Structure formats: structure tokens, C-alpha cells
Length: 218
Ligand code: DX5
Ligand code: ZN
Image (cartoon, rainbow, N blue to C red):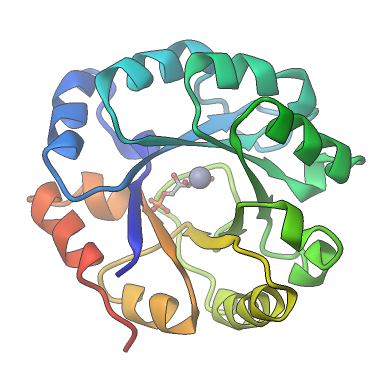
């Protein structure tokens, strides 16, 4: 069964307590928290202050996805705010290996996210150092976009790299995950499904999370 990581980007920010209560009562495994800086992506979301509120609202794993330039400048602030996992974009890091070491020294799990155009092969020399790979299945910046089908090819290639290297990294898929495409995503090798609109725009989000959770490899 996949881990389910609802993206709070699609929550109703006028009733966050209610949405957190809903998630806490659900089978969601992680809170997926999308940080955007208006430079790396064409949108601005929220920062450490809000993440600290989420930290206090839940005991679930806080999975922080940094869509920001120079993530090394902010990694400590997000760790202090309560992140359990910090994922940084390969495209935003000149010294990716150094930045991963920084995350480890902060005591958080270290993730690397790849945009749709970035081949998984960029991870070959670092795959054993990381805890998570987040494959973007949309171009980052906004919730509610369409899943890019080629992601399935990338998942299979990444799974093979992970298996061959002895890495324990989890594969997380982020963007456009629906009840319809989840089985093929899990069948390709995904371990974690991020879901924003599919969860928060559902008439019954708790049931939708349970349905996603039940997804088995088709
Ligand atoms: C996109 C974010 C995603 C997004 C997912 O830049 O990283 O986490 O919120 O939302 P959906 O599931 O609606 O595509
Ligand atoms: Zn995300």
C-alpha cells in the first residue's frame, strides 16, 4: 500500500484547523507542505511560520517540499519549524551533494525533487545518500494540473536504479494524482502519492484518502 501525502496547498486556508482535523482522523500518512518562492516557481505559497503551525496541529510526518532557489539558506529554518523530511530541487542546487549533507546534519530526512524534464540519471551518483526522490509529474508551481504520462517511464527507471544501487530511497509522485491514475503509478513503483485537489476538492476527503491508500499495483 502506498503512503498518502495530502498537499495542504489545496486546503481551505480560512479553515485550516478543520482541514488538519480531517487529515488527522484520516489514513493520510504525511502532511505534504509546498513552499514556493516566486523565483524557482512562478507562485508564492508559505514559509516556516505556517509550517510550525502545521507541526503543532499534527503528529503525522511533515514532508516539506522546497520549490525555492538556494534552499541551503533556509534548510535550518524549516528544520526548526518542525519538518521531518526536507526535499530540495536538483535544478535549484549547484552543490547538491553538499546540500544533502547539510540536511542530514540537521537531522531531517533528505529528499531530492526532479522537474518533469530532468532525467532520473542525474541521481545516479547520489542515490544511496538520500531518503526520498520526489518525481514531479506536473511542472511545479500550482495544484490542480494534469498528470504527465511520461512520469511512468521515469518511475520505472528510478525504481531500477534504486534496486540496483542498494538505496533505500522512497519514490514520491507529486502532481495530478487521481483515483483513476493511482493504480498505474503504484504499479510502476511509486511508494508515496502526493494528492492536493483529489483530496481537498472531494466531497468526502477522508473516504478519498482511504481509497487512495487501498491502491494496489494493478
Ligand atoms: C505542485 C506541488 C504539488 C501540488 C499537488 O507544485 O508541488 O504538491 O500541490 O497538487 P495536485 O495533486 O492538485 O496536483
Ligand atoms: Zn509538492
